[in-house]
Length: 140
Image 1 (cartoon, rainbow, N blue to C red):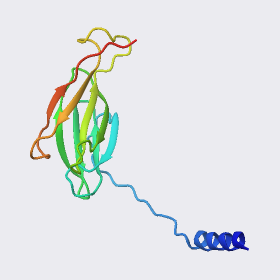
Image 2 (image 1 turned 90 degrees about the horizontal axis):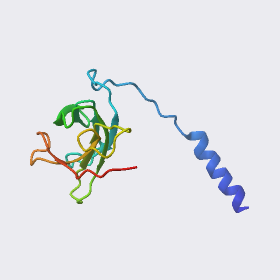
Image 3 (image 1 turned 120 degrees about the vertical axis):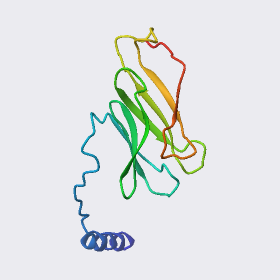
């Protein structure tokens, strides 16, 4: 009997479920490549903002207005290629790491291979952040 009641309850919720409706919204028409995206709270307002790792800059779009803020530009000679954003220190705002100048064929020469940066936030998170290049480690 319990199983029948559970099935009935699930059926009622399934029948009454409303299908979500989505609409396209263009946030930025001038994205170069857009290698990586992250969703994280950048300013402590408890809303996920969009963080974009583009070819030559890292930017974030403030939710819900989607106003663009540049974090940093031109970290490496070649493209920025990956990004990670998480609240590491527990202040409710994301910290960021970025990889750039990826070169799968070269891992020993620090000048030719890729680089990873920690981006230290400015007091005003809408201003440029300080890039700190992490030590280069050869890989195989």
